[in-house]
Amino acid sequence: MNLPDREPLKRILVTGGAGFLGSHLCERLVEAGHDVICLDNFFTSQKSNVTHLLNHQNFELIRHDVTHPLWLEVDEIYNLACPASPIHYQFNPIKTMKVSVLGAINVLGMAKRCKAKVFQASTSEVYGDPDIHPQPETYRGNVNPIGPRACYDEGKRAAETLFFDYHRSNGVNIRVVRIFNTYGPRMHPYDGRVVSNFIIQALRGEDITIYGNGSQTRSFCYVDDLINGFLAMMDAPDDCIGPVNIGNPYEFTIRELAELTIELTNSKSQITFLPLPADDPTQRQPDITLAREKLGWQPAIQLREGLAKTIEYFAGVDLAAFRRPTS
Ligand code: NAD
Ligand code: UDP
Image (cartoon, rainbow, N blue to C red; front, side, top):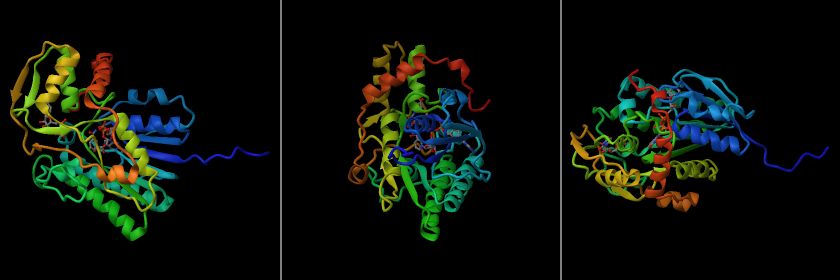
């Protein structure tokens, strides 16, 4: 019998696969026909993010903590497991550092054994509070190593170091992306991130809480664009290992975001100003020249359109079904 001439499908592990970004990634990989193993300990997510995938025969869900070794046979690994918002990663900062460092060691060890390609979800936070603007990948950052954000920033920096050392010492095929602020459906409603906070406050008609005077900036990438960037990076030639910035270069002040959220929700919410948290970066904008040149990638969805889709999602969600991080 002649088998159809098609690219063999891969077995792919996604750590943190039940989270906001992970669930979108799993969805795309399942749709492409790959065998997907989603691994998560549900620290900052819930099964409902992936229950729609459970009926697919090429999707498997494992409850596991990535700080403990794991033994699987896979072709590719996307390492996303890590609490990602300040209130989540500051909840247990020592554990956050362990997730980044031990998680990286465990997935890299597995990649070395299986000869799998391994992808690290790094972050714009490796640049800290940047004094170069916008931030290219060559910028080495301005991180406070002893501040309240350090557990995340320095954990992610250490993970990058481990990825490059496994690559240099053991020939592990790595891909490292630095993700800038991303938003969209399935963000955790109580993760304290600015987009989810503002939308929920606006939908409830509560005060919109701007920390500081709202002049600090962020550049917001819609989740579908980001996942396209992930897939392009994983498929890039083997000399393109990164780090590569993935984000939307359009920069907004937090005040502009608040005003746009009020407009799109047609809300009667007022803006209120609260103290700025320690080490909160004053500006952030990715330089995506490298992603454009090496991956042919750039975002297509601008904030107004993406925010409208995210508002539609939050308007339809039962917020009582979500756990707060401290519970
Ligand atoms: P998220 O919190 O929704 O997802 C993280 C997932 O990892 C959750 O499902 C959580 O339960 C899981 N997890 C946490 N600790 C774990 C552990 N010890 N073992 C197994 N699973 C564990 O956050 P997200 O926004 O989807 O972020 C995914 C990744 O992308 C993270 O590594 C984050 O640092 C990175 N990132 C995200 C953004 C963003 O804007 N969303 C920006 C920069 C980097
Ligand atoms: N922020 C805010 N109000 C909120 C939540 C966040 O003004 O209710 C600010 C926060 O201080 C920061 C920006 O919005 O300057 C982005 O915060 P987020 O936690 O979403 O991401 P990060 O600081 O990690 O980029």
